[in-house]
Length: 511
Ligand code: UDP
Image (cartoon, rainbow, N blue to C red; front, top):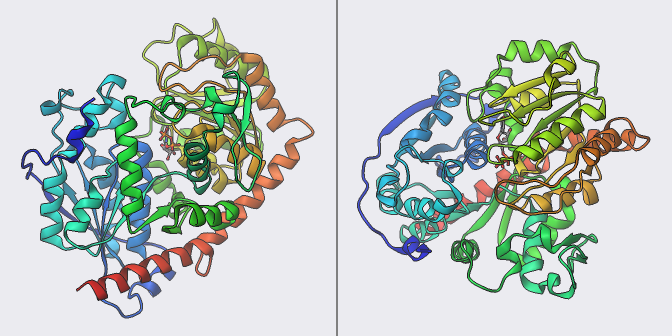
């Protein structure tokens, strides 16, 4: 599918624009670490894949590093600049600098619509074109590295060619997968052992070998690439990602030790590369504005949203949101509406659909007062952090999981694609802070097959059954651990200290 071009430097795209913003951290103790062990100020480049689920945590990561006295430059494309700018501008008055450098994204040259600078805007058949266009940013990136000479490049797993760019200038590249240690370990075991070959049908479960927990999956829950020995659409890209992972200086994780201690250890054994757990990254957003302004502009006024939440009892509502990418079929949307209604619980439901013919007759009238529908983009972290939220119906995107963990909210899990089926198992089988709707089919788009009865049952199980208190108390315990992890002396705080020390000593020996 033309992925070979990932490795070819094609044309010079040198239209980067320079913006410099001051950035400030309001958490006073952060100033203490401003001068880190008296060393020269480190300079990090952050280069996320152009997708909400990757840019949002990268911005949080950049803020976190800046709060520890690191000079930070974010690399992105012109149409994605607004996602970063507002947050940076809002904080600029306290004097920590974050740069944004823009690199032209060759969309049209790769047969993509002119404004297609985000992965979720590319249709399935154009994904190879998108990755090819991203790879064509290589030369501009290298010019920026040459100009700025950063100490380190933290770049997305989907930009595997950046390992080569970093090596050219003898700077370490740290890979950011945006997922958990657990998912990395499950994926590695499946690739190595191919346990799905030992079952006789797609729906028979197999155990993923050699993991600290007994994790069961079915073939249908794996991606086509994971199940096949043949070269499929994304397999060259995935191979390039694996190769570049192993050549990277290390991997940084939006996770924390206490969340998955067994898998931090297992990962280190299996992958043999350095890693640092520095999350949950979303916890760097401490005030309302920061929580509201993440990714797209919110489709609901924050006061209206908070007023609605304030009118509800603690732990009484279900928040339903499936991230930034997933689309269900109309039939599935209808089942979801019916399931929500049948659960009898109050809810906030976020969706993005072009038409609403699937909406059951009279649904909005019947659920008025009980339900709040947000059409478009929700201020997710603001909502999850509200005490009235009692459960999060999620597609198990890793950012969403960590945001729910940080808020102490139990989950109703409904994985759809990517590594979401693995993330579900972290919730249901490792943390034991949620119940699944019984999603069985990995599907990149047009997901369906989950019935309203199963949805209502899983919601009731987490909200009101005799198991609910158990889910809730375990979720609260993880929230405490998450918050402690990021405080001074906590595991993630120390993880970042170690990362900075590692890069500092690399830089001092490299020059
Ligand atoms: N998000 C949000 N409002 C929405 C939908 C998503 O703020 O209406 C944010 C969410 O808080 C998370 C990110 O978008 O930080 C989605 O990332 P995730 O890994 O959960 O899923 P993806 O979108 O990558 O599938």
